[in-house]
Image 1 (cartoon, one colour):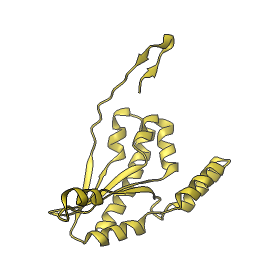
Image 2: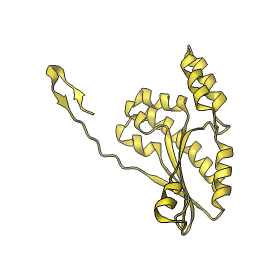
Image 3: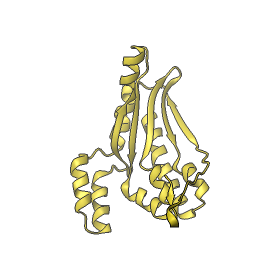
Image 4: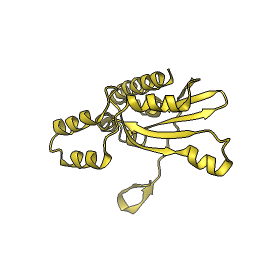
Length: 175
C-alpha cells in the first residue's frame, strides 16, 4: 500500500523477507493428527468471542477474554480452510486431504505489532496439515523469520515464544 507523503505524493516501500518453514512429518493417519491438533488448541465461538473482545474496556479485561478462549497451549483457532475438498473436486479422489488452519493468540499478536506494526501481516499464523506421499505434513512458517529483518528484539522475543508454542503443538499432534 502506498504511504501518503506531504503534498499528496505516494511512496511504495518494499522489503525482502526470508522465511523459515518448518515441517513435521508423521506416519499417523490424517484424521488422528487433526483430532489431536484440534484437542491442543482452543475453539471459541468466534461471534461470541468478537463481541466479548469489543466489549472489553481495559487491557486486563481483553486479556481475560482471550485467556478464556485459548487452550492450555495458549492458542486458539480463528478459522480453517478445507483445501483438500477443492483439490478432490478438481483432481479426483486421489488428491490428498489438506487443511489450512489460521490460529494464534490476540494478546501475543498485539505484543508483536506494538513493536513492529507489520507483524499484523503475519499474525494470526497459518498451519498447513496435508497428506503427501511420504506422510502427513504439519507445516508452519516461523514468526521469528517473518520479523527478523525488522531487527526489533522485543518483537523477536515474542515471536520466538509463539514459535515454541506452535511447534510444540505440531510435534504433539504428529505423535
